[in-house]
Amino acid sequence: MIKNDSQLTLENVSFSWPSGVNALDQCNFSISKKGLWMIVGSNGSGKSTLFRLISGMITPQTGKLVCTFKPALIFQNPEHQILLPSCGSDLMLSAPRNLKRKELHARIKSALAQVGLAGMFTRPIHTLSGGQKQRLAIAGAIVSEANLLLLDEPTALLDPENQLSILTIVQDLIQQSKHQMAALWITHRLEELAYCDGGVLMKRGEISKWYRGDELMKKLK
Ligand SMILES: Nc1ncnc2c1ncn2[C@@H]1O[C@H](COP(=O)(O)OP(=O)(O)O)[C@@H](O)[C@H]1O
Ligand SMILES: [Mg+2]
Image (tube, rainbow, N blue to C red; front, top):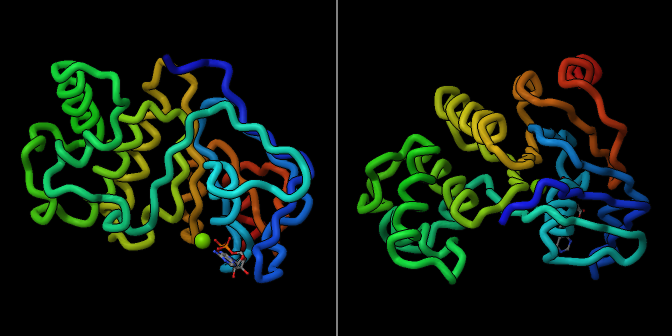
């Protein structure tokens, strides 16, 4: 069951890579509300490290991180996370293990429909466009029952039309979800800030306060 009281909280979190690079420095940050939240920041500012910490791949050396959301990572290049040869078989990898076959198929079909890939259960992956592959990666997160999508520059490789389709799919997923669903979206494309419910700026391992999308856009121009 997806809970409705999930939260993500970082209190004075710092993280250094073994190389000695201090990627996050005394970060305070939290999300508890449904919404599309964005992060902007130059290369090397610590954005992807933050995602690794939230998803539990690494743990902070100091400070406290609590994440009771179920996170799912979506990368810039969907080729890095699609593993099996057809849409349906690939999505099976993301599904909880306890589902009966009928339930599993119904869930996969529903996730495909939610990302605009209805009827593509048996479709070979190599016939999908880049935008469709990115939508399949999002369907994987839906199938896994994640309620915190961590999108690391999901539109960087896409043309404007596919960029818009990913943005609106994620927005619709959040708005239409009956549960508490949030997305944290890293971007270099400032025009995307128009779609967020709030955004932060990362600079040299530090996270700013929350801004409205339009405020953050103005600040960065
Ligand atoms: N796996 C890693 N091993 C060592 N250093 C890393 C690793 N990943 C990132 N870093 C370093 O941590 C800093 C922050 O990187 P990163 O979190 O990838 O930033 P961003 O995603 O904002 O570009 C950089 O100096 C980078 O070189
Ligand atoms: Mg990065």
